[in-house]
Image (cartoon, rainbow, N blue to C red; front, side, top):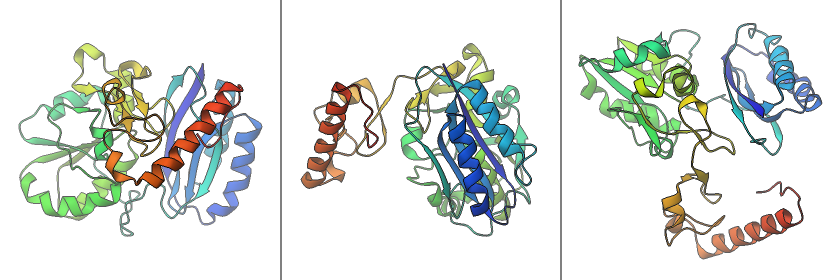
Length: 300
């Protein structure tokens, strides 16, 4: 059983490039895989490994400037959910495209998982899912507003168009692990919203702590690794991934005529040309050959 840690910290890194080599070396030495993003605004990522390996990497991260206290959520996976380790330098650790947004200055009020149901059940509260459309499609909170964004960078424009709908309401926001809400709540506060809240630790913390019988969550939660989704208790979910468009696919999707493993799903069938699909078919053929040889295909 592997430990999976989703982590982030907004803090000022004067030279993130200098932090990359020792962080990568620590993760490699301890057999940890996944993705870690470094930017001037901090660190973000999801990693997996043994208990000892994850503890070693978290200890290294806590030694970085401003990271003595860092937010992370843990779950488990029966198989290693990542093929490799990637430590990357980015302009933002979660891309919103609003340079003036600074979660270190102000964010919405944090709401613990155990208090979330009471908040979003109030008549004077509007609940907003800050995730992307393909994530919302497989699960969200009952009654939550779906902005139908394809990327987080679309959220500011959506808010500008829709802010008047929520006048006089308290705004409760949530996302997978909490990081997108750090920026989203800072942004809406800067746009004049007053009573703004967000779910501390995100959906992952809620699914971990709130019993299923008391839960207002409907469906599963998309995660950015080979597990694809998790449910209550952070148990691995029932979705696979379309390796053409990277969206989650259900058993019903796989039974659809437009589904072809590694090539297309009912959602993306018309998004790619036949030439694209031929490339995807060749990739899938190589993956199948590698699997038959008992090898891992790193491009799969």
